[in-house]
Image (cartoon, rainbow, N blue to C red; front, side, top):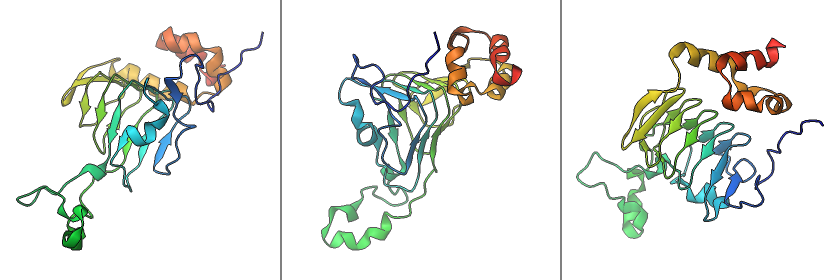
Length: 215
């Protein structure tokens, strides 16, 4: 019986679980990029992820999420539009209130930003994790439930807390280098399908043996 890859274009990969959605088919903003099979799980309208979970996204900073990422319920990305001035006595954004205050709109434009928010491939976000603007999260990382990520996360790092701190790395440096060189998330989909068990539960040696270039 031939192996049939999953379909990355469907919104609900598990029809019996409407709370799970693939994000790539749902994204409409040119400032958001999501890779194949990255999903969001939420019992309360997961299809609204772009507006409910990506907050203060007024541009031009981008949100980039890699392939095969798992986002638990309530994961949120705070974008740079949430920034306020902090160099004067008040942080209140008077100009957005209208009236004559709007004449001072220059006071809240051009605030310093932290750049794009970038999530690597195969990243797992726990329940209600929050990612602050401009953070870069490496491949294979895990973000614990309730974490507030304010700094970059290394490849295969596990972080938790508020602010999130590195708890440990899933692999040592040499093995991380091997995993990044293998980059299984870039394999052809039919090849991933053939080697799902190795990708999920095999060792690095087995993964190397399964890599397309080793055949």
